[in-house]
Image 1 (cartoon, rainbow, N blue to C red):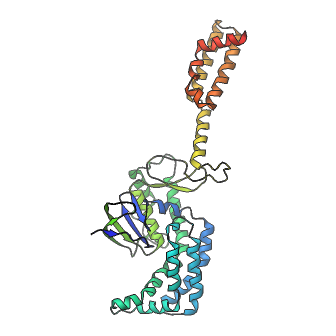
Image 2 (cartoon, rainbow, N blue to C red; image 1 turned 60 degrees about the vertical axis):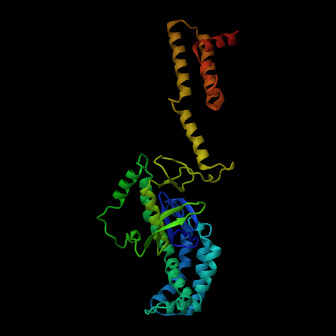
Length: 370
């Protein structure tokens, strides 16, 4: 039986081959884990302040203290967290217009009362379960949002070191090479402790479903995993990407991380270059820089033609088969043609090589002398 995809499931991923579907959107697996590396420290600092009222409520709930006076500040902070993340990848994929009203209803005395009912050990009837729905939501969302700033900071700190290793020049970016890098950074004998607790994958559940993904008319057998925290979900997406050869790369223009889906050592992302008045992307500027560097290289094909012609002129001067005046004119012509070819692609691919032939250059020099 084909299951319709659930577009509103904040902590659930559907994995299929080299893609992942989240909130009704299908993207290359590893995308969200990579995007998290770009979350500014200023955003995490702001999140840290917003998480404090939520954590005070979480502490009271853990101690079975149903303190309703904590709810207004916690509700305002929870709404502030989602509002702050509305335009911050990867959280910008969340439908905030859907989630914000539900959170506002959960952070209420009614939601807290329902949470208490949800903690009872005896089985609840379907009617009772519906009555405590807000309490279940409150019990799930409070720890998720309360720990968000700390866990994001830990994720960035630990995962960025690994990403820099993957980004090193000359590294093997194939799935085998990425696996070897992973083994060096996270050896099997390393035990989980306070410093590596963010690496733990706990309280996640998985299932296999036949679903219709967005924009497709054929069912796919996907692995659906439900997480208890954003960081656990993002970390899993990062590592699942490595399994299929997807890895982060740091743009040499803007300094942001972007995902590569093959083994090529791409240097530039496709985002707009900061401060560029022409509105060009980093890749466009990078290609221009690369061309300029190639043009400056001594072994550039256009320069090799020029160097070969200059050597021929010098040898004829040494042998006395060419006079100095004609040789000087030929050298000036050759240099101007080489410079024109570097700046004019059409000329470089057209008449440049023919005009740089010894006979053609000599004939033009004689014409110029006359």
